[in-house]
Length: 204
Length: 335
Image 1: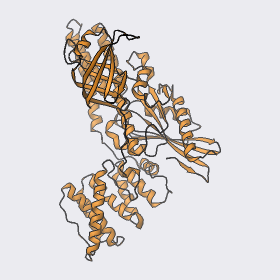
Image 2: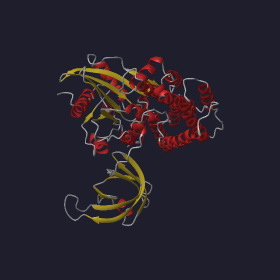
Image 3: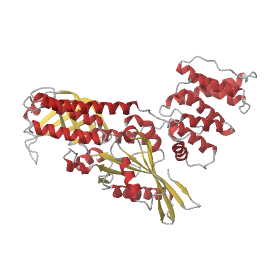
Image 4: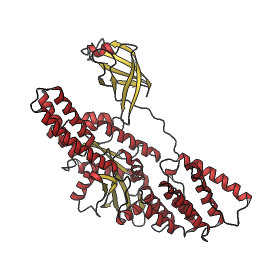
């Protein structure tokens, strides 16, 4: 849950990038870090391991400036995607305010996308939160690989697989090229702040 | 597709998956390419190609082993430990003992045991979090099965004036319970001035309750003094599993052994309906009314389940855009 300092008129919220291993969560954050110098308020910290796999989490602090008279600070996190880091994912997800689910468009990763979404659903449930209630944006990543002739799932199929019930806004993306990354984070922030406004009434 | 083109496509895919860090998927593609080469003796320099692929698979295996053998939760730099402590200390005031305790617990959960231990040690100075800090020190040792170290720690606290009798007993009952569960036989010393019978009874009850709560909590072995959502058992939400598509392993006929995927056109409870084109003669023959489907996959947005089902009806559609196609009702038996 976001913290709201009424005296300082300051709100701090947490956005988590979730998804299967190697789907491009860290690449999203790296692009944001490189591109939004003005908004980034500190270094991007990555705790990774052998083979550049995220071990614990990536962290990127941002400041969006004043919105409706309130100073808005955002903490972006990624979770480790590898199956064995389940407890770490759960820990990072604690008190999340908004979510980006990054799905891998490669056909061979179809099942992994579904399993990761299921894992997200279960971890949220363990915190007493429903996946339907947290602001969520879907990102169908690695669309650039289509040019290489690699079998990708059509967007329609991915949306059918992952988003039929959730009906979250979705964006096709190529995080490595930055395509779709700004739209995804913008939409997620918009939804998160609107949701927090409803709960905390900070923008009176 | 021409086998040569197929091999080229597979090798290209494998190389790309490798670049993406999808090592198992890369391996799978190399294996498929090798199988095609072996099946097609006419491919020029087939043996040479296979030798090259084998080299690549050996490299891949090495990388996979390196990843598998890497420490699960290695010790990270002090700077990163500071960040973990700060980010996961909860929303309280920075110097608030409960926040400090939460930060130390996060360090332990991320496997940074040495640092967590020194934080917990510091927290022993504070009355309000002393028992929780002591239990967490013990838990850090128990996590790495250092039972003797946990016992020695407790014995040190027996002579530590900061601990009251009641606090010591709480920690002792907790630790003794954990030792019993792990099959580690060790009687923990008490101070000479032992507690009254009544106190023991109260503590035994408290310990039993705590143990029951601990058993219910599996993902979070490190304990916090205050109760929060993470430590609570939350009621299961009732949910209706919406199945988007199914995979059916064909069990008879010319397509026996093939996994065929169908979109679910509608679903009511455990009954799903599929439409099969009238051109799929072989499939239609294999999926007659009453056919037991022992190997099925059910794809829903939140889960993939394996299970079985039975074809309860097969009717030809008489009108509309799907006229002539077949409508199949399947009752899901197990998932």
